[in-house]
Length: 372
Image 1: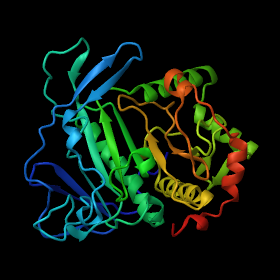
Image 2 (image 1 turned 120 degrees about the vertical axis):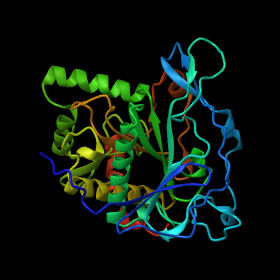
Image 3 (image 1 turned 30 degrees about the vertical axis):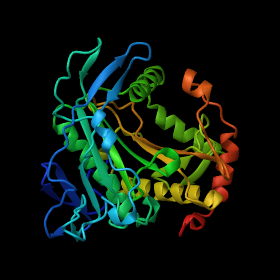
Image 4 (image 1 turned 180 degrees about the vertical axis):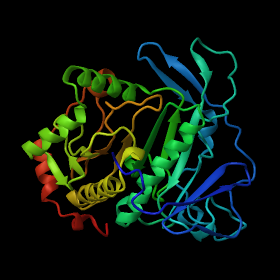
């Protein structure tokens, strides 16, 4: 059985902002706050998110009109994710000693206290869920891959802790941690950060993963991930890095030219299921994959990073915990845009074979991505 202990100490301090939102500060050492807990405004945003059912796609669509006023590409001196330096112009974070901060999004698409919406079309209901911001570092200039190995490991532990806390509300069925990086993918704040969306239902992507891997286990008697890892290791063509307890691959079914998966070698459903050593290995492989993507063309690769965990109504031993990286450059200066077949039919067209992409990524030294 996996050792449930975290690979490094996780210290946490829970605080409350002037507008009532919770803030949790995490550190590799005891957390110390200097000064008051700030908020850009003392008044809470009147969030009334709603969901409407799409009968043809079989999925919910989120509506949150209050988000039209959210912060958009502010100048560096008004960075809301940097620690407050002038009490007259408060940000989201306090001064102090900590590594990672998590707080409720001021402009959420889902909330645990969403009121019932006014009468609307059939299939309209309250947008129940949670939206959190995860600030990776107090530094505004860095990247996720600039964090030390132990800080990336801490981030995995923070994602695991947030998942457990959200599950404890009794209102959440699925948690997705993700990072959008680059204006090319719609980022409106450059400070290194990600988000967590927690849903009161199982979203369609996770539901389909669960169904597919459940059918595989029923047919073969073992988790899909176990066979996938064994096959990729035996082939070696699509491996980018094998760290023993974790590995990165360009999957044989990659939809983006340099799509990379980071996954544990042992099939588990949740980050909290990993041993300390496994979490540290996964962190090293994740950092390595991000550095290679930046070093590939010598620029900061715009990407989406998504952390796929099992639904919380489990256990679901068949669900494969893994991290998917979707790089948006398919060649130097050339973006991957979703075309008609992808948007209209859900069928992706890829210009590069995964075996070729993996060979190119293996040839990139992670050091080439440093300092960009």
